[in-house]
Length: 392
Image 1 (cartoon, rainbow, N blue to C red):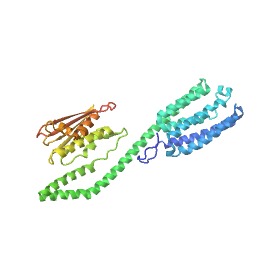
Image 2 (spheres, rainbow, N blue to C red):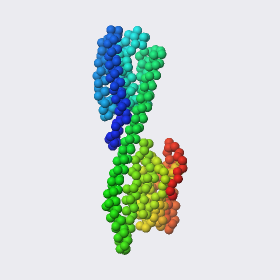
Image 3 (tube, helix red, strand yellow):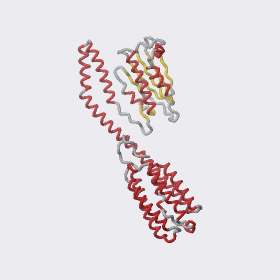
């Protein structure tokens, strides 16, 4: 469609060779049309109108070749205007050609210049645009001639075929450009992360490791600081070791990799060995639910509580479990909190899950810890995947 968004890496548009071919085709067919007009000039019903059409074709050819030679000039609006201009000039042959020329299937004034509207649409909009424009151009040809013949059938096949073939090539080139842009963006993000990892390892991680060791030796309050330093060291190592998450061409993100950044000395994350690809909005919402659940563990279960996050992908749903070994939640405590206006669990956890069409269950007993189990169905349009194994 239009040029890639500004946040896309500026890679070479894979459709550029098609546009260069279109420009050459348009210039060559314009010169061919000029030769035919010169040869048939005295046979036209309105020769002066043929000259007007040729002049307009030359102006439009020069303008579009200039615009299409630049990536920024290949806009939907210009290509749509191209269809209108070329069709209007083609249909003007109704007032130029004589009845005898129509019956004999003599070339029109625009002649082979007419299909250039199809090549432009195919290069811009891919196979659907090329196919639709080819059918439209063939219909205009029939409307002008108002007859059926082997020549008309051949023209129809060529017009539709050219649009379809070039459209397929354009769609493939556009997809290749998008994949290249994502690969370059991921490569740049990985390089930046590796650079940050080296800097962090040489500074922050070494300091945290020293604080952890020295605090453990001193004991007392220093031991508490050593414990916190150790947790932050583990969290930083997990963060810099996790591959940057780049959505796929279908807009999906790996939830398993995103959950890895939550791992600390107190939080244990277990995910399948293969990526768990979900649509980005669903992935972000589930990540937010887990993060809010862990925030409640940190707030209510005590500083020494351990937490476990388990992710499973079933054929038709995703299952997330967040468990801790804290004191548990007394019966009725969540209802009291909601009545007092503290809606963290009600809105941030249960509300999010309900909005996703999922279910959430709570298993807790005083002194036995707490476990939330979240089940969210996969979108209907998402094909069922084979059950994947992973670490547990």
